[in-house]
Amino acid sequence: MKKIIISIFFTFLFSVDAFSEMATCFAGECEFYLSLWYDYAETLCMDSLIMEDVETGPISFTIVDTGEECLIFNER
Image 1 (cartoon, one colour):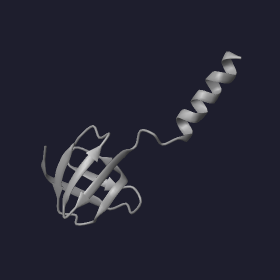
Image 2 (cartoon, one colour):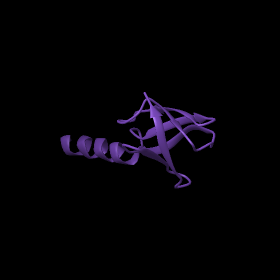
Image 3 (cartoon, helix red, strand yellow):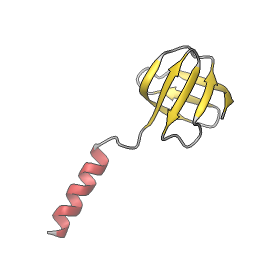
């Protein structure tokens, strides 16, 4: 019984993208959720994003859907 519960737990954990980094951006100002690097940042990318999946790094972030990389020039 324990093995079944553990396997269901891990199946749910790895099938649900519950821990993805997200961003909301307007006019080059972005707020990040669940990001290790940023809470707020300014960028030259002018895409409007609403809770979009992103991958953050130390100097930029990448929009997962489009693959566009946006450099950060100011952060908090």
